[in-house]
Length: 151
Image (cartoon, rainbow, N blue to C red; front, side):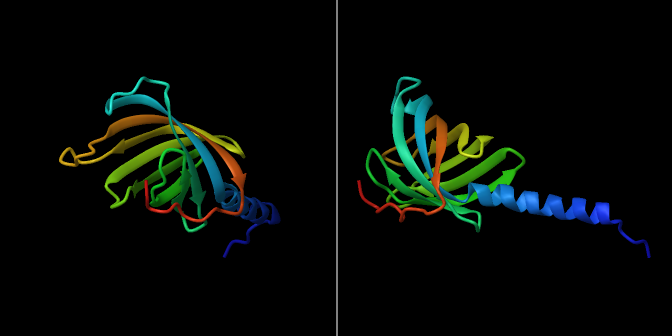
């Protein structure tokens, strides 16, 4: 049986701790500004601020919505990180009728930028098909409570 050198053990431990620290650094309350890239329904001018949203990223790789500027509505989903990329997907709405998926990029320890797609099924009376640019700022380790489910 081969012995691991002290250097190899230290390098392995450092890698494990770094991966855990990177994930832990994302956990907490985030504030996001969301802008239209393209919106088929409702038609909206590109670059328009359409929402300010609070997100709580939890250590179990789930998230929930904490607040919204334009009407408060519950939302939740899952997230994962790969390098500087953060991937999210979930649902929101009074009956979880909206689906969303996004890919964010870590700019630094307190900022994420990226794009989301939000959609509903075309049979939904409030049909949506939107592409959104999102800019996130880290607020702190303590999350606000989930958003109430009302408009």
